[in-house]
Length: 283
Image (cartoon, rainbow, N blue to C red):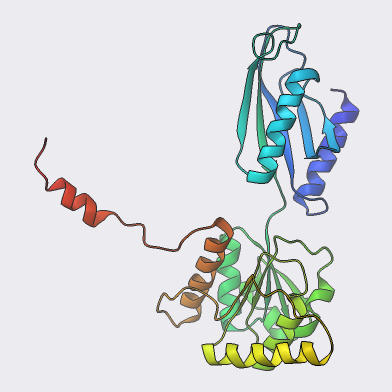
């Protein structure tokens, strides 16, 4: 693969990691023997069947890698394609190749609407959890709080969050925790119309019932279709029992991570079973 291909692939990877292009799959030659058609380190970047940059050698080996790329793009789980080119693929050049296939994507974004005490705690926990955090509030003094050092802040009204998001992503998460119920409603009505993987709103069950009834009624009165609420969670978080801002932040991020990874949020301890089994006589 020439320098031109290498530069093109490298630039495309940067675009992916910065969120300018969608998730892709990188295939890298990590092993070779005999007269294999590519060198160690050769790369192929796969966005889809009609959008491929670079090459790992062409022919049957490349088709096997492209098939693996499509699987990894959907599953997110890396895999290795290891082939004897003549025995496994019937390629006359012979030799062996091993290609590592992995998905690459931009850092996941969390949009936090509300810069109060709970928002400050959530932002810090979310940064540690690996999110690119964006905070929206109309109070400049709160946006300057040290809790947001690792976040990007935006001075914005609650119902103008969407105007500050330049490239909406269906993997984005939103957390709504403003200082006022009406502001929460406006923020939710705004962001629920954007692509998203998760939206959470803080508040009591009573607040949620009243707010959603009012919000749906306003969509109806304006003759607008009701938004898809299937990925909205309110009240937000798991029932961990804590009430302090830091405890709420852990609860909120726990639910967000469980949703993201398909977790059940159930307890994982096996101590009771292990102790009981340890008490059984040896066979």
